[in-house]
Image (cartoon, rainbow, N blue to C red; front, side):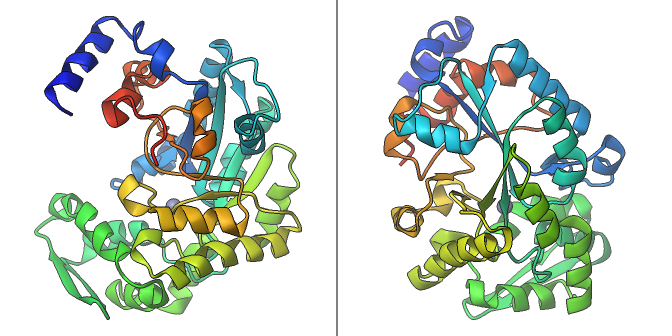
Length: 346
Ligand SMILES: [Zn+2]
């Protein structure tokens, strides 16, 4: 952020969003969530704690937005609004849940049904297929019992060492970057040997944490739930070759459709930061036939996003979003602090 933008941000904050709101609040927000876990289960995690929202907090946010006169809409409605097919009379909120965790069904769905709130669950196929490695969870476990991690793939060998848990967790971002760059065809094998896992352990973890195909099918019959895709193997699409990216994006859609008997129209880029995607991936997502695709890049949603339906911003939502941060979300200050005046992120 340059000097001029700093000054503007200061002005937006000082005027409590009165100046930013008309320009940058947009029409609504898409929220990105992952898991829904009761507080005592969330607390079992350190590194991954904020990957889960507690059911109480989820309900609190839903009531808050209803009180603020926001409508909860589905991604289909959002897509239709961006295409000019429908009008939205109020500001909106879309809820999206990434990866496909079983707790979405157990703890999330009852709350969504109670308040008649639609949501999208982006499924990563390798999880219901029992071969997915939720390595962010393995890393948290592994850091407890080992003091180094070696990632050895065809692009080279990387080694991470740590003295204690904090030291390990402080390297999570670098570990994540190194894993993103592993070719998707090798990913399973490399992670399996890095974390010293057997196929049975991998399958067991998938079964414990992720939705099964039967549960995904069941969720797809819920009128409030939209099933979306999130690649076959949770890969960073920018770091893979074009053929692999196409396979990851297309095959996940085809497989989910065959399992649930419905068209899959929405996609979320794994990792999804602006550095994790590129125009090639947007082109593939569009050609494959998705209606929207979402990023993991904070921002508000504007009518002009009809030109960037395959790169829609999402705000993170979790237990630790305080009132001030939420106000910044709603009045466009947060959008400005990340994106400046840019509304279409690509
Ligand atoms: Zn994900």
